[in-house]
Length: 570
Ligand code: ZN
Image (cartoon, rainbow, N blue to C red):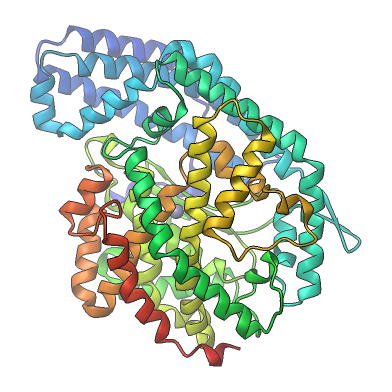
């Protein structure tokens, strides 16, 4: 079976035909309407899944090939066509789910496929109606507008013109003057684009609120949760969780920041100082893509037979495109082609410690996709986002014993920075989340009011951030550059939830590796069969929403942090 899987380079670029989709989907829907029992329904469901897995794969291949070659007009055209197709496909799925959820044989299908599948259908039906399609298209356009503003940034810096990611390197330079200059350049650029970006966001908030009201919700919050596929927790649970992070994690993060600037020897530290963790510079990977992939290959081979098989499959089928080059979209991601049962990892290696991290983090995502590739129910292949990030963030920690392969003498430096970053991320994560709740609960607020609220929340959770001489950032505008706030409302908290679970694997792995790995493997093989909190319960992991659990998770981490001899890093 595996041998027949084609190599990524040989995947054909085929734009699915709207006509074919239309005819096939309608024929299958008609057939489904006529079935008499669960047995007959299953036959149609199989046909439906087979057909749409092929369509999804074709669309997926085009979208990946586009990110690899964004200036290729042929692929761009294909990509645009696929974009237009998505609402249409959503519409067919809506009809399909409507038939299945109201069928007289629903109970027997639930027995065969699990109740959760139908819960997901029920939720997704609550979040869709044909009448919102034009609004969804408008919303997508606004997201593209935001991406265009950010992607097209041209920031003058020391005689050069840089984009945002190029400027990022200077923001974390070991030279303080350089960091400061870069921060001033960024602040100026943000100030010049404040009105444009603020206006785009205002339109987004209004249109999302409009969509929510058309579907019968008071505001966008509840609908946003439905769009995230959350069936087992609500905004109140998340608010309680944020309160725990605020109480238990914020002080630990503040202590880490304090120690950091002390060892850097900086007086009156500013926000741009925190990007440099050690006076001697951040951990450096041992080499480029070739060196790091070799390290990852050894790591996955030693880790387990399953990871070994997985990574060899990735390599032999050319399922990774890792190094930055001209014409490639920025960023990194992992995706999956159901027809070929193949994950794919995209990244932009640039010689920093992040490169090694990609091979662990995206490797974790890809490993899960690989393990669940043969699921009969495609809806169960991919979990909701907070569960997805457990696979990847935990893999980052299971990589700890092998980190020397990537960083040599800098391995401990990397480990300490990795854990510190992960802890420090939580207060920022809840800032982004709390801000969005406020925004969608107050859709009539002005841009200026939103910025004031951001500043207030930011001061509460990350009080170390100082923006003297940076008037734009100092006026509560840091969020303008946080893409998730624009493109994926309410998504951000998922990273923090997963992080809290991944911490548990780090701790357990150090106590009993075999047991921890077995637990991870069992959890990962569940794929998306269960909602987040049930996945945790079934795998004996602490639920971040439960009062007291954040305190329990952070306690052993403090001990791990204290075990590093940080003096030697400077
Ligand atoms: Zn991820």
